[in-house]
Image 1 (cartoon, rainbow, N blue to C red):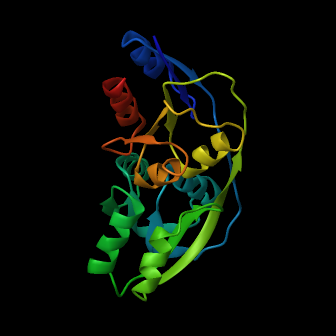
Image 2: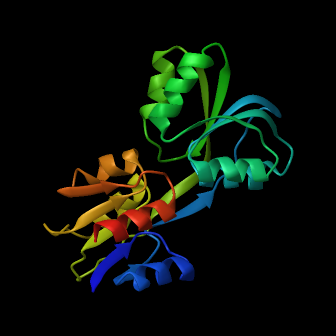
Length: 217
C-alpha cells in the first residue's frame, strides 16, 4: 500500500477516498492561522483576496462594519466563500499571477485593497505596482509554522501552501523517490526547490489534489 503525508488535516470522507484506492494517509496541520485586527475604509470599491483565510479573517474582524462593492479572488473555493457571505465577485484567477494579469488588463484605473497574510507571495503586488495600479495591503492574518519531524519515508506529500512546504522542510529532508503533490503553481514553485518530482493539481481545491495523487500513485 502506498503511503502519503498530508500537510493539512483531511476530512473522514477524504481519507476514506484515499484508503479505498489503496493509499494510506497520515495528516497533520503544518501551519496555524491567527486572525489579526486591522484598519480599512468603511466602504471599499475593490478588494482582492487570494486565500480563504483572508476572507474568513475579514469577515470575523470587520463584523459587518466594512462593506465591499467588488471582489477579485483566486480559486473557486474563495469565490464560493465570498458569495456565500453576500459579497460580489467580478473577477477570478486560478492563481495570483493570472488574477493580476486580468486586473492589469481591465481595471487599470481602479484602486484596490489587498487583504492578505503576514506571509504572502510577491507575484500579485509586484505585478500591479509595475502597472502603476493603486494597491493598499491590509494584513488580516498571521501564519505560524507548526514544525514536526517524521522518520517515515513517503511515496507522496500533499502541500496546500508555500508555508506548508517551508514548515515540512524545516524539520525533514525529502527522500529521492518522494513526490510532492501541490494545490497550485505558487505552492509547486516552493516545492520544486526541494523535491525532484512535483505534481500540480489542475484546480486549486483539496479534492483536485487528492484526485491527482490517486491517479499518480
